[in-house]
Length: 97
Image (cartoon, rainbow, N blue to C red; front, side, top):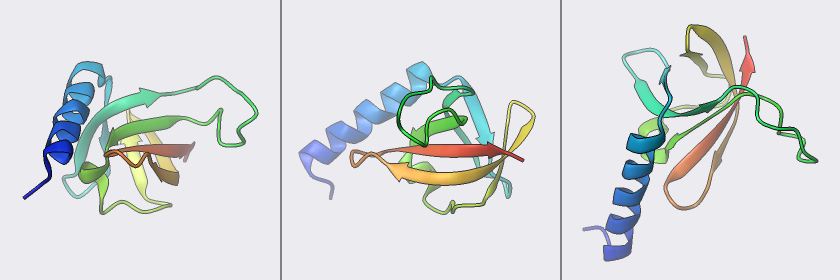
């Protein structure tokens, strides 16, 4: 059984995705995940910035690995990195294929 905090965290994250999702990511094999897609984040001093990114529930993409193919808004991408935030969400950096 999940701890009370884990249950609250899960509900908050699900609400975030439900309210802010702007795209679905199709990872193939029937895995389609709703999340927050940012096609061109602002550049800053972080070397990972500037590439498209997709944020979603970590539990939704537990089987995804680096170099996986994904289609978002009819554009083909490859997973560049997978960065869990430690509280149930994950930021996936993408490269246009």
